[in-house]
Length: 327
Image 1 (cartoon, rainbow, N blue to C red):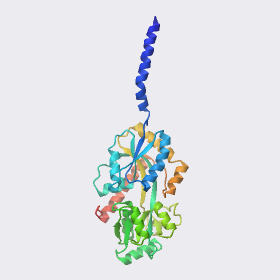
Image 2: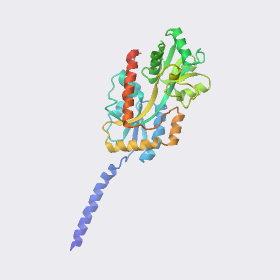
Image 3: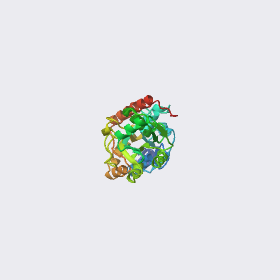
Image 4: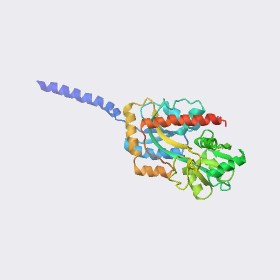
């Protein structure tokens, strides 16, 4: 007599399991491609870094990683897009110090880097290199400072644009060395570097990776690196700090971020997988070939301290130099 009842119960159980399956599948994060937003055009340092990390991350997540480019406004358009995306873990961003600590000091942006975005992982940093055209009569920082004082503001230096880390590295240099130089902004680092090696502009603060070939071929002379320690890519080039400007440091760092309301399970998954990815020796080597250093995750407290410190640091440089987006 219980046999028909068992059939009914079994059928109900099977039906319940069938109904539960789509929900169980959705609970397995991620179950579709993850989008990484980049605030620049294709082909730059941020793009290259994102793709190296993304290639490893998709293996860990078991889903494709796709890239979406949102260039403009010093990469703040991309950061704003991530901040306002659905906090479901399917839209994250690889950003850098520009939209996180520089642009919020320069203009009104649609996001608060401390409140509207949550760091998933610090990725790496790259120092800059102080370059001069071979015709410039300076072989080190001390000689360049002396030349700048002699020129009285007539010595020009190029950057990739107003408010870029390359621009602010120059302003920080001017302030600490107590010299005057004239800023010449370009629409990107490539055109600025082209004019430097062509002799149209004598000085530039450049990202190390793109500048290496120019230095090695003798088309540009490296006087110092802007990081706190010497670069593995330019081990014979001293830091600017060790050449008399104590405490001088200006680096471009990269960070994975997500909308602030990202649920804890997704955030924990990203933090775990990115920590594993960034510990891979092969990835570290690949990132270092681009001129990056300091590869690896940091604790949430360390990331928070970095953001607050850099926001204050570049805010002061911007205010003291009177920089506006029309500078």
